Image (cartoon, rainbow, N blue to C red; front, side, top):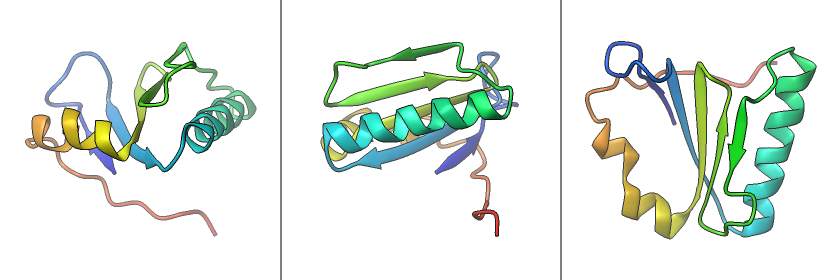
Length: 94
């Protein structure tokens, strides 16, 4: 899920909220995103949760990516907390 935070938060422009089914999957996603950011000259400012099996955060400054396990995603419920944020429709590049 991608939320447009520009009108709601001075911290970032977009939140990306994702789930992983295991610690390994969550950390692989975070690593792949950091690598993709580097390739696009958009290096992550900070990554936290490297040891966590609940939540990994990748801060690209304008875009903040949250990768949760299912239980933590339900607990923190960022989709509801930021329910006023418009959801961005996107599709994978072809």
